[in-house]
Image (cartoon, rainbow, N blue to C red):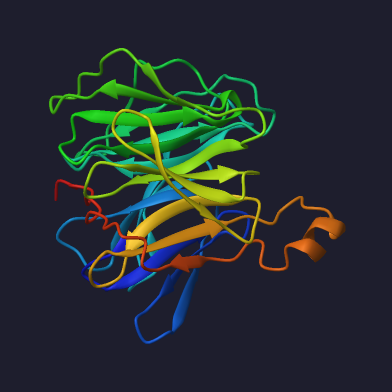
Length: 275
């Protein structure tokens, strides 16, 4: 994610248990955490506080003091699951999904409100919750259970009410799997396609309108950034790739920047923590 106040790009190395920040001057700073970080959000009214989705639950982290609040457990009765993709809705509540390495659809999607109360959303169980993002007006939510190769959309109301999921995009068997997504200022959804070696843009009706080929087969999540929010950043993965594939993809696991896409992003909504 791009932080407008810091003018810096932040990303997580999940298996490396760390968050990194790339500043405008090219300097990179890293924070080591006690658990894997599946997703995060910046907190409103603070330049240093973040909400983290850790292995076992939700916590607050201050990048200046490097202090971590007590973890609020999520799915403590499911030892194989951990928090995965997440993003704030337009009201500043954090919405996230879970990851089950056994890829059994046993996990839920959750929402964290300003009081750090966590509620399970009335959505079907999933194995790998991903692609969570919201239309510019906040009235539509998108998400996927990656193994199903389908991105879903649903009506999303400011009071928290959710409509019935409907199929937005279904990827073919040769196209890879839908991983992380972000929304541009025109309402297009940009999806990183795991094993698809590309980023794909879909308009609000689900029609493909742009495709960017990448030098790695496992892109994981895009984000618009830069001073004008016109640079498209994307993370990628290298874990479990064979030696042969790593020889073909030496940049696997890297973070990439794509300029001159012709599209602009939106500022990321910050988590509205009640202080």
